Amino acid sequence: MKTGVKRALVLELFDKQGGRCCYCDRPMVILPRGRDQNRPDAATLEHLITGRRKGWTKRHNMAAACRECNNMRGSAMDWCTFKTYRMGEFWEFISGCKDL
Ligand SMILES: [Zn+2]
Image (cartoon, rainbow, N blue to C red; front, side, top):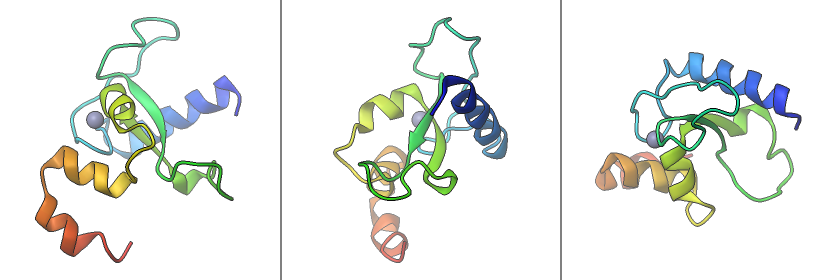
């Protein structure tokens, strides 16, 4: 994906999510290109399902996440487990996420 397209998508998702991270629900910031990109609250493009499976770059697999969450998740956890972990909702996770 080209940088310009990626950026436009981050902006779109940012707007759709009310400027909040898809994992920790904290407000994010959109930074001008090349500036302070390592801020933990910078909005980044996140693939919900990692790995190069079919359809992994599709829109429904994208969400805006803050850099801190994006870095922390890596590809070790699936998105639902990670969100649960970030939100501290392990019990709700067990009953709520298994249908996804
Ligand atoms: Zn976050």
